[in-house]
Length: 178
Length: 124
Image (cartoon, rainbow over all chains, first blue to last red; front, side, top):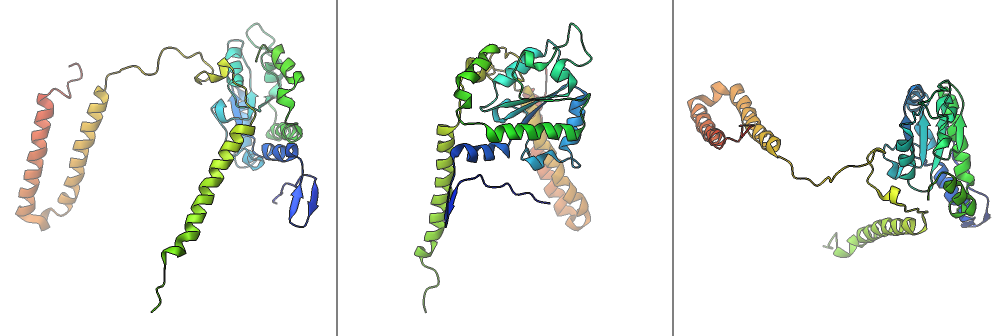
């Protein structure tokens, strides 16, 4: 079944349609999120299944997983992040293009999971801001897709001014980013 | 008889070209102008998979391998010419044989030159 995205609400008349820019850009962003898979362990294996034919991740507009942060919109962190990996993750996040979203897939990325130990980061939100957390150890592809749909909601409803707002700047300042 | 095509008939194609290029230029400029940007020092750095980059990428390095690879391609092509000759060996007869001998001797001269110049000597 083919689902065609509904046009945003606006003023319609014969031969024209007017709506606000936020919604149009949100619609476009929502349906062309290019993910950067940052897969470090078993959740990454689940993501491989998510990308493959049965679950077909690309039907949500993520046809092209980006392995460089330069063209990526969504950082998908899947797996245990060791403390030595934290600066790498941070650098990758900082080098992504604006606007960007982050999804923490699985217990390890969200909270450290069972690895309550000196060497493992207790959740990636200690180093980068996270938009959506997906629970599970590891989560099934359906759960990853559900998390991705939540990111789509965020992208669709984000006002254009959000990334330059004081609130967002405070958030970045909390992570010592500019 | 009326001429079937006039230069003016190609105007739509020119128009299409102008629109196609114009669309690309306009969208590229528009996205660069209205797209959100955040230029920080960290972001402007070269992407090395999140690892700090070390040294300069523009260093001189030995091109020995390049020379070997090029010479390989050259003599590889020579072998390719021998296959059709082998297939038509009887049809081509003595003339073909002599022609191949000339061809091979030319290439062999080149080969001796390569060896004399020590191009294949890795430690040279």
